[in-house]
Image 1 (cartoon, rainbow over the protein chains, first blue to last red):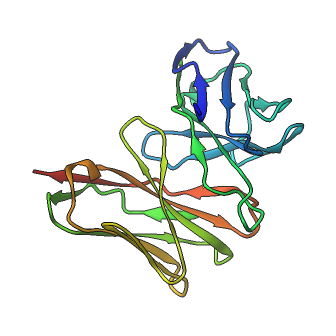
Image 2: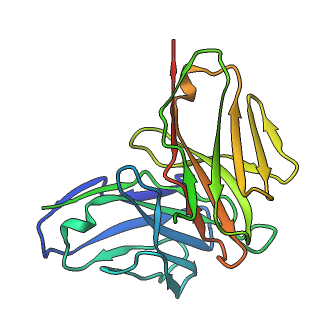
Length: 116
Length: 111
């Protein structure tokens, strides 16, 4: 299993440009998540999905959009990039645990995005 | 106030020594607790879950104090490879599968 893969690894955007961060998992996990991590800060949840066709906002959704058309893929779209979106973006996935909530989260290697 | 707070460190530890640090959480409805490890510029990886009675995994011991709302991690016989940032992670009963991350405690093990 490749686990969770993310592309690209690095990207530099100009203000106002758009891009899509790709995330794919091959573990057949229902739950998928997008986080951003700013220097010296904890991970902040942007969006999450509990299954194909179902997405919901996390803590910091403004400026982002997601879709979940398949179990495997959970792309994150940035529209009109701003310097405040400079960050490291992590995608993660998990399966429902015994409690019905998310089990251990497995993270992708991250995308380092700079907006200039 | 942050939901999950950690001392950022760094904790400088001689190889072979013991180091311990805490994390406090603000939501009393928090139900599940974890320690994740994050190496420099890499993705977080689960180190261990934290159970109510406390638990041990090799050289790592985690404790939970619900009354005071903190969890702790103790590393015995520190190895150079233990150098990393340790993230305290909390899941609340009203956040279905969603985790709250602390900013991390940096540990540096020196020869």
